[in-house]
Length: 90
Image (tube, rainbow, N blue to C red; front, side, top):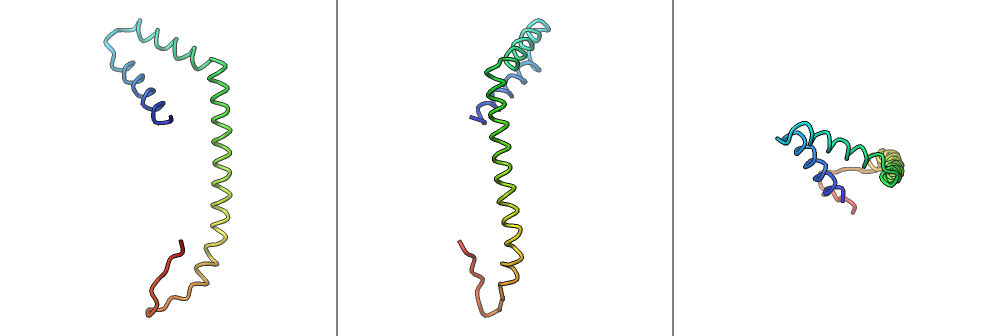
């Protein structure tokens, strides 16, 4: 979905910048894009996406902090010897 939206936005921008239809067509596209962005359904969807993004960012931040606390323990607890091969968990 994100890829499709990015492609459509890129195509629209490319069309607007590369069009030979002139100023009238540019103004028409500009008005249409403003109408879409001001649409309550679009605003609601943008708000939900923003909230979901903040939720994911918070979860990622929490996991990163948890891992940050574990790294010194794992590094300190690993006694490395030349005779023993390095084994990675997972």
